[in-house]
Amino acid sequence: MLTGLNIAVIGGDARQLEVIRKLTELDAKLSLVGFDQLDHGFTGATKVNIDEVQFEEVDSIILPIPGTDQEGTVDTVFSNIEVKLTEDLLMRTPDHCVIFSGITNDYLNNLVQNTNRKLIQLFNRDDVAIYNSIPTVEGTIMMVIQHTDITIHGSNVAVLGLGRVGMSVARTFASLGAKVKVGARDSAHLARITEMGLTPFHLSELEQESKDVDVCINTIPHLIVTSKVISNMPAHTLIVDLASKPGGTDFRYAEKRGIKALLAPGLPGIVAPKTAGQIVANVLTQLLEEVKNEGKGLSS
Ligand code: NAP
Image (cartoon, rainbow, N blue to C red):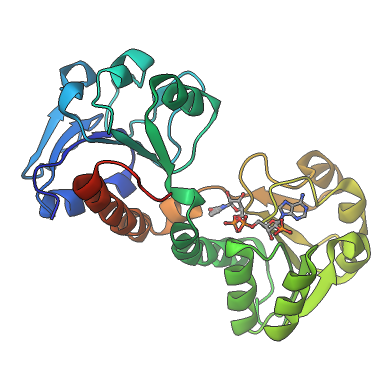
């Protein structure tokens, strides 16, 4: 139970509603900022403006998955009122106040550094990233079905990167009957790809390996699908780039060559906001128990 914890939930989309639901069930006291247009109410949660939050009593601040923008503005889907997280506000919180965010940026990093507060990036955690890869894969399947006129079964799929997303993507497309090859640079990854019964190739071979690809799914957040790689692809190849913005594809060249290339960020929030919210809520609950019990010393 989270009885006695004061938490400010600042901004967010449908995923954050799952977080609010779970935390109120566990008896935390919530101040909700950026939810004034939400019809639904939650027992134990009060909708307030940011200037009404008693930051002096806040044990934890929960930001949405994207955190803030570079000016500190927090995305609020359920409000038209601009919400900004500033140094002045954070300075008012108790020393043990922990800030949770999906990802971070320079603004947020500077903010927590200048105020000496702890920031936990949830999407840095393996558990969150692996759970989150499940709706990501389902969204990828949806996109591939929507943008091709062939079945996944029997098609040549190249997955780039064998990280947390790449592994789930490769395994699932193989289960659907695709002929999957996976590009990686680490010899341990190449071994794992072989162990998974898939075809490995070193990323240095990507130009050659692109010649017979129907669908190329990139998970590497660096320019990897270069103009040279694209120029070797068949004209019908679909590129789905899952890597965080700006992706790892030369989109300008793909368009010039007439190859369909789609940057597909935020798939979990699009195809399964409820599950995506539950993933975050479950991990947050464990971490907030630590805030409650220890106040400090959280593992990130
Ligand atoms: P990850 O576990 O860190 O995996 C990244 C992979 O990229 C690793 O295999 C890594 O290989 C490889 N890589 C990184 N830099 C490279 C480089 N310069 N050259 C070659 N390979 C490189 O990350 P993840 O959790 O799988 O996430 C992958 C991307 O998907 C991230 O950008 C993440 O933000 C994004 N994402 C998108 C969605 C969506 O809805 N589109 C959902 C979840 C995540 P090494 O181990 O050899 O470095």
